[in-house]
Image (cartoon, rainbow, N blue to C red; front, side, top):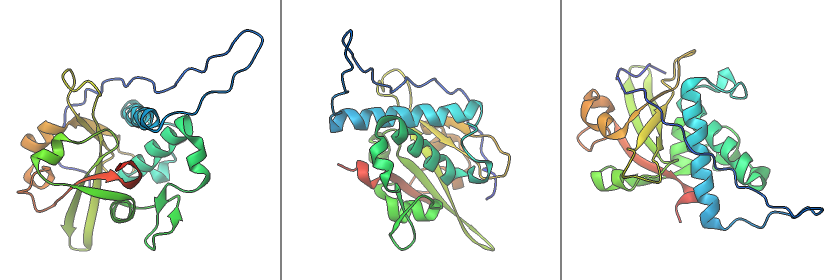
Length: 212
């Protein structure tokens, strides 16, 4: 996949830990109570942010080099977040393959068409983005279309920190990058701006299991 021809600010803010403490009385071990769906979703988003931003500094050894591209970053961040917060979900694969069957692997196009749902392409949809959502592009090349995904990281306290994108450019050995979403929409080359005027911009997407 071609390296992105854009410049983004590389100031990745540390994400808070999503680990929930487990209480225990002296002399007894108390099993953790079931996590409410709303709490679990918040913790999952927090862990996705933490994992994704950590790759900007240095990729985890557990993230295999052969899997390091834009879709691989999303797969790795999601799987790691679920392993930390809701490991039981990983009893079956998170993703769907081209036939709609559960799969541990899906490329960028298949992630979009099978596992994510569109949110829209306009400013209103951009304002509603949450951590874990995806910004998607389709670039046309002589040898066929190339899909590219960027992972959204939006702090819970929106008043004090802007939404960011975290992405892998796709080139072997390239570093994971991050930047401000609003800056991407105004300062990037047109073909990489997440705005309706850009025909290469497919829109914003959300993991189907997080649509409720």
